[in-house]
Image (tube, rainbow, N blue to C red; front, side, top):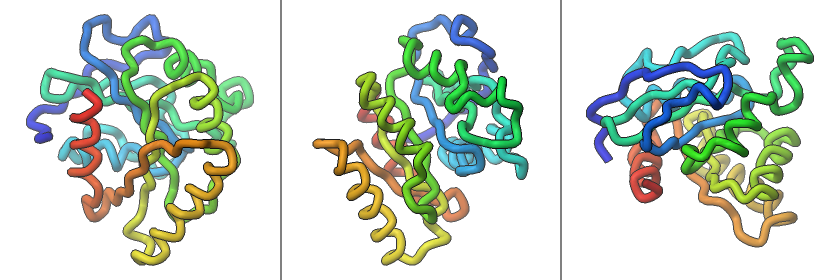
Length: 195
């Protein structure tokens, strides 16, 4: 898939505000600071489309970006960041759960995980919740440029082993590096096949 057009459509505080058209949503979520905005900018080929911040937890709204006038790329708030108040936090905030579990536009969800880290409990709980609710999702390993090919392979295998303890069938998994542009074609063709 070629991304020829990518434009910001709207920010929503609740799912009643998301666009009411029939374009499908492909959403991206992950722990704060996992590299979501950088990945979105890399996929769309637009440097400042999603705001990249040095401070984790900056995205607090559901952001819709219209791609090629045919589908929405959706940037969801990060979860699990400690420097927001308890009321804002919940483990997975109400805005995230409402969107993921109730928004009929959402066609597929990518959960981003940092390839350099051991499987994190909060990610595993989120993934488990998706499975329990039958939400279609895949995993994108971010920041893979920080690892050697061997380390990257081990990291993905470790994740597969951990998930295999609970899952009979593993979700699709893709690797990416926003720095190097790695995984862009694979992720975009996966999205194309989803749509």
